[in-house]
Image (cartoon, rainbow, N blue to C red; front, side, top):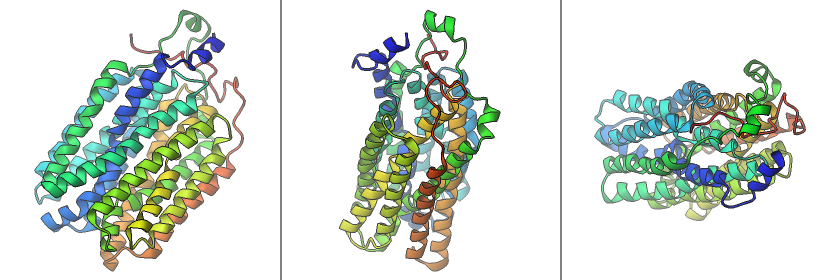
Length: 423
C-alpha cells in the first residue's frame, strides 16, 4: 500500500496536488503574506495622521507577533484534532474583518493595538501552520516539494500585495489601503472551502494503523533538538522581522522613493519564492539542517547589504538576497519536525516553534523602533546586529544530528494517510 501511495504522488491528478493549489492560494493572502510585508507601508502615513511615534506604531507589530506566539500552540492542537476547514475558514473571516476595520482608526492608539491583537489571535489559522497540516497527510515521497509549493504562496503574496497596497495608498489614502487588505484576505475562502482537507483513512490503513505515530509531546518538547530548532527560528525572526517591519521607512529615509521601497518588498517576495522552491527540491535529497544554514547565511548577507542601501540598485540587491535566504525557514522547520518527531503531534509542535518565531518577530521591530526614536535615524550598526542574529541562527543548525531513518516510529511516521479527516 505504501508503494502504491508513493507512486500516485507522481501523477498530476493525484488529489493531494489539488490540496496544494488551494493551500498555495490561502497562504498567498494570509497573515504570513500580508502582515510582515505591508506593515512598514503604513508607518509614515500613521505617524503623520496621528502623531504617533514609530516605536509606538511598531509595538502593534510586536503585539500581533506575541499574540501569535501565545495562540499558535492552541491552533496547532485544534488542527491535530479537527478537520482543517473548521479552523481555517472562521480564521479568515475574522482576519479580513479586522484588517478592514483598521480603515476606521482614530487617534486612540489603543484601538490600533486591540486590532493587531485580534490579528495575532487568528493569524496562524490563516497561514502555513494550518495548511501544511493538511498537505502533509497527502505526501511522503514528495513532501519537501509539496511544502515548498504551498509556502511559495506567501512569497507570491508578498510580491503582489505590497505593490497593490502602495498603489491604493498613493492614489487614495492609507484608510483605503487597510480596506483593500481586508478584501484581499477573503480571496482564500473559495478554494479552501472546496479542496482543503486531510487525506481520508483507507480500510487497509485503518486496520494496520489505528492512530498516527511519533514522539509524545513531552518527549519532543524535552529534547535538545526541539530547542535548537526553536532558537534558530527565534533568532532568524528577530533579525528579519526587525528589518522588514521598518524596511520601507528605512529606505525612504535614505532617499529611496516610496514606490521603489514597495518594490524592494516585492522583490524580496519574488526571491523568496525561488528560495522556497530551491529548498523544497533539496530537502528531498540532502540533510535539511545544512540547507537551512546556507540559506540563513545568505539572508544575513542580504541584511548587511541593506546597511548601505542609499540607492535603488543596492536596496534591490539586499532585499533579493534577504528574501532568497528567508525562503527556507518555512520549508525546513515543518520538514524537520516531521522527520525528528513524527506527525502524531505535528501541528501542536509546529505551533510551538511558531511561538518561538513570534517572540523573535515581536521583539525585533520594537527594538528597531526604540532605537530610531532614541537616535532619530536607523543606525547602520543596528542593522548589522540584525544580520548577525540570522548568521548565529544559521550556525546553530550544525548542532542538529542526522534524523533517524524512515520507519523509526519514535521520530517518523511511515504512512501519512492515516490521519482522521472529514468526509
